[in-house]
Image (cartoon, rainbow, N blue to C red; front, side, top):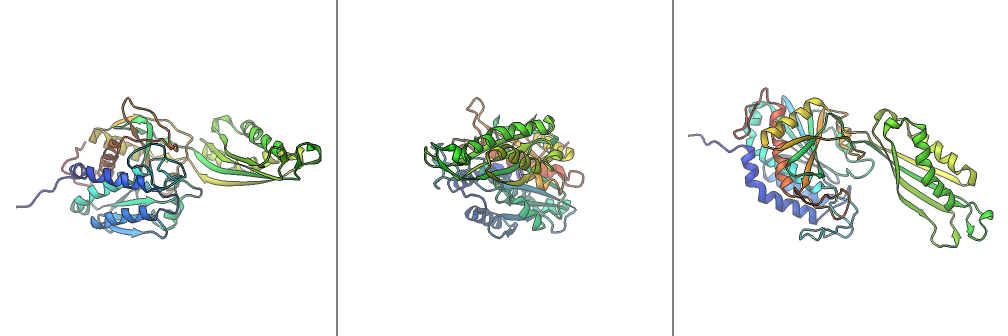
Length: 404
């Protein structure tokens, strides 16, 4: 008599204790962009143990395939694996053990969710083979920097044979058990801007004999964002915000150099493609009365993540099949290099609720971020059902996933 193996959703239930332990281990050992070697190794080791075809990328990052080697349809599930240069302040038993580095954006959760989905799907290899459905797990390094690791994955050819890609991103403003979905742009374009001013410094008692660089830098910080808002269509939703400003080290010395660094974010992808030269023009105009020289380093980052209708509908049906509440969400000014993948293949990113119902609302990129770990199983269940739904026309149903 043939033994009927449990479906992937049942497999996930059995995997839950392991996944929680895996996530806590990642959280305690965060690694910043392009240095995610330990993270890559533990992910690759676990997937190899489950029988997946694993490719360890140079430096960091992991690709893993399961299902037929020449599928009719191949779906990718993407996770980002890097942490941030942030000091953790949660006080949790599994807090970061690395000074000044923390998983303050939830990438440890993303990684564990995709790992769990892959492990669950690995119990259904025969069904995948029969359906001609391939699954690719993408554990991408360096999402938090510009240029991001998505470029490395694409240039490596890992998206050349894909048909669809899905991802989830932690949303600490959404209750656990929910997912936010949106067709069209769900994030914004995000670029890096650095302005360096140079001039003749001197004593603060004689500013007229100097090129008052500190004053000029202050004008850049305050005037350029306002001028930019008057030069582009306000419907573009542009926001130039400085995160770092440095000049001098003594109260009675006018320095000879100073820098301001920040990000320019906008909702409109068309205007985004042409705004760089305008920023340089405005900086030059603002500093010209002060006789300082300005160097503007404008680094294009990412376009908006633009979700395709079909994959969003697949996520919606996956949510309904697994008891996850799907809600409509709105476009944010956050940036995500998942956007580059969607220039290659259709796909969708959903916002995974991580807030304990009735609990505190945290913010991403902050050292006190705490996620409700129930989100891990929720996310993995959702992605497994999305894989099933992406090829529903030819794929026999898994034993424990409802079909429509």
